[in-house]
Image 1 (cartoon, rainbow, N blue to C red):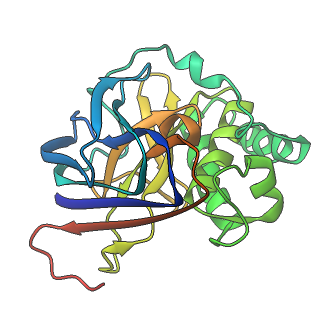
Image 2: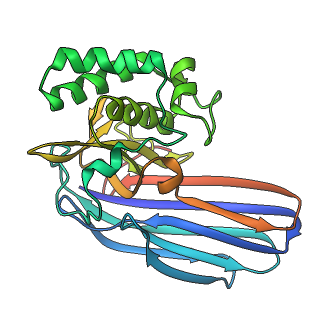
Amino acid sequence: MRLRIAHSTTYHYDPPASGVIQVLRLTPSSHDGQYVASWQIDTSTDSRLDMHRDAFGNIIHVLTHGSLSDLTVNVSGLIETHDTGGVLKGTDERFPPSLFLRATSLTDVNAEMGKFAGGLRAEAEDDVLGFLHSLLLQLHDYMTFDTDPTHTGTSATEAFALKRGVCQDYAHIFIACARSAGVPARFVSGHFLRADGVVNQEAGHAWAEAFAEGLGWVGFDPTNGICTTDAHARVAIGLDYLGAAPVRGTRYGGGKEIMSVAVKVDQAGRQSQS
């Protein structure tokens, strides 16, 4: 599948900020099942943009600029994807899977979540993949997609108690439950081609990857209740959202900050609706 992706992030500072530093994880890498045919990144200002890879192998651009009132970062490109049944191959793996058993403040579990995950793990016995598929489907049924009650700092335990959230929350809960059952899991940020033909989206997508011995890393999208397919474009990974966020940064001075995001994901040659 050929996916055309455009992602725009705009900041407005009132009064102007005296300085801005932004860390951009907006550029995907190629691996088995995903080939980045073309990709470009543009900014609305004459900013310094330094590229390197972080500890997890994600491509990072660090943007720095002096005083400004408005900033827009645009990325766009074409990615060719192939359905691998969710199994990940050919990625730049810099750490052993055991690193991804490490809990963070966003992926901790409480007693209720531990009981939820423990019950599914016991039912699956030694079948780790069976446990992960059961967790995927149970979580998809348990949660309701809702953009109102959560934010980027909402933890897995908070979202689990609400039974509501967005794709980031679904991923955090999946990761927390998998880790509590002894299965390494990590956060993935990227993009998803919707099956209903809608291409204009309010944000990027997020899902999880978990490690099964003998198979390797497998992608699980609990928001949609499926393993990852050729409709998923993988951009960055981390222990949680903070390590894979598309844009993170800080500003010096200035007053009110307003941020807006626009994402477009389409299949090349497909007729779509907005």
